Image (tube, rainbow, N blue to C red; front, top):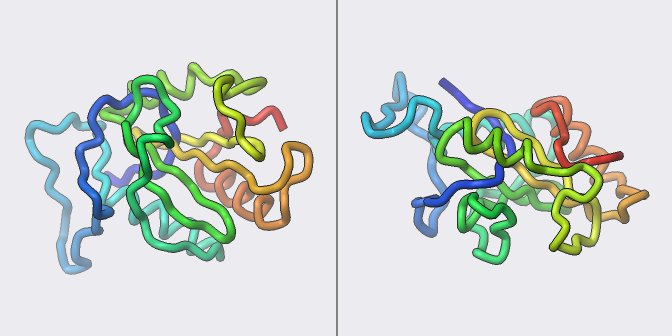
Length: 169
């Protein structure tokens, strides 16, 4: 099962180390999820490869996934360190939650009028979710005037991942 991207509020233990997950070899017929994992838990190697692939297939330039910092942990009970993906001239942060229910609770708690009241972003934040992974993209332009690159990124995110939980625009 391939899960795509999204943004959630709470994940207590994002246990992956300092290197980004790698997708399974193309010759591998399937990905084995440990028996202790929840059936709806993210398979980061597969899910992150799918997210990056969807963005690239839509014509966006992307870099490689790298580990974010604790200062980017914007969800009270979410992962302590997100994953970062350079896209065009911006960055998408990915928060893999422990399961789908946790991710759903996280995005349900977002108020589109003031999605992150204690954080002063330069541009408007945009939050997407698909499966147990929540994505955060903060546009580089102003709140009212996204840059052309922001518009391209947002268009792809909306078409691939649906609802923008944090945007009133």
